[in-house]
Length: 192
Image (cartoon, rainbow, N blue to C red; front, side, top):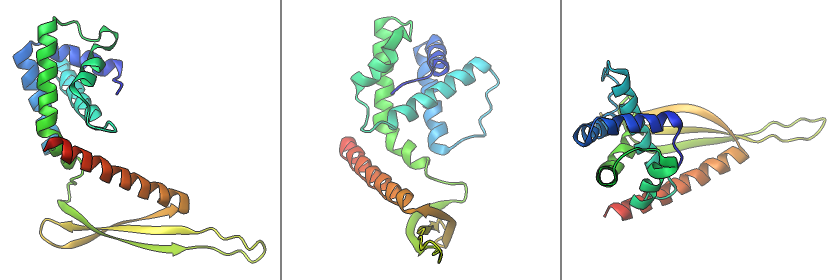
């Protein structure tokens, strides 16, 4: 996990407000990510930078191949002496971030898949194989039309946009879905 200089600066700003305020900022970032609350207006540029940096920190930690360990999180934040904090503050802050990730990680991840159209769940996929044949060269260019079917919260089914995939792209998509399944199984196991 690697954080940009801007994100590092934002985390430093958050910690500069003191432990209680940094924890409140962290909780606000979690709330923003879970509720997809884009209506929050932050007038102070430094406060906004701190809030955004904590959101990025949470999302980066959750995007790792496996759930990030507390020691790995500490290493990332200690990297290049990123945070100029006393050791006790640093240890307490890392503990709070890591505990919040354990508590709210699944909620943050699932909320990122919600859409403004209130889709409740993915219930199916339709696909069609198409190809072109050129009589002069006998070349075949297969491609797949894929459409995901969603179920609204009101129970109605809604077809998504039709997406055109080459064979290689479809294989890659299926591979990524298999990886996502394995990671979700790991996360569920970790959170138990």
